[in-house]
Image (cartoon, rainbow, N blue to C red; front, side):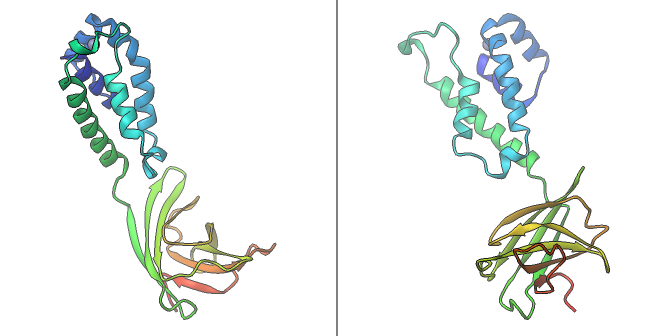
Amino acid sequence: MNCERFRADRLAGIIGDEDRKHLDECPACRGRVPGLDSGRTALGDPAAWEEPPPELGARVTALVTALPRSPRPWWRRGLLGPISAAAVAIVILGLVVTMRSPAPDWEVAIPGTDLAPVAAGTIEGWNTDTGTRMVMQIDGLDPAPDGFVYELWLSTDTLHVSAGTFIAAERVELTTGVSRADFPRLWVTLEPVDDNESPSGHTVLDTDPH
Ligand SMILES: [Zn+2]
């Protein structure tokens, strides 16, 4: 167990006997624990993985390789340490990405209607504690014209719940407070930006075409 291994473990939430032993013996790593723990919390936030910032890998590497308080001169530092730590960081990133980007709970194709005959795509959904998170990927749908937005609805036969509005749908993420199990039909309307909160009837995409 060396410092980088301990830090990589700590960042990944692994605390074994070897890690505990190292922590007892190493003041430098004890000083790193708060930073590593807050780093792990930040990495555990699903929002961090929607669009991982480009500097994330460097930040993880920095957490793992951060120098002790009284660094040795550069000529006495091995190059192998930072390189192997970077490799460890990449492995951790891979693990966290895999854990934090689970497969969707459902996926449905959503074809265009007569109003948007060349549009088609899919919606992936994740059931969450507070409802449903969806990622919609649509090809062949022009951006909404000025003064209009698209709106995604989840419906039963008679009840319609909005999942939000958007302009372009190449890849759009939307959330709603209901579950698709209760509101199985998904459909998209073109809505004028006005004070009418009901669906316009201008349906451009529909999982349940009539
Ligand atoms: Zn250490």
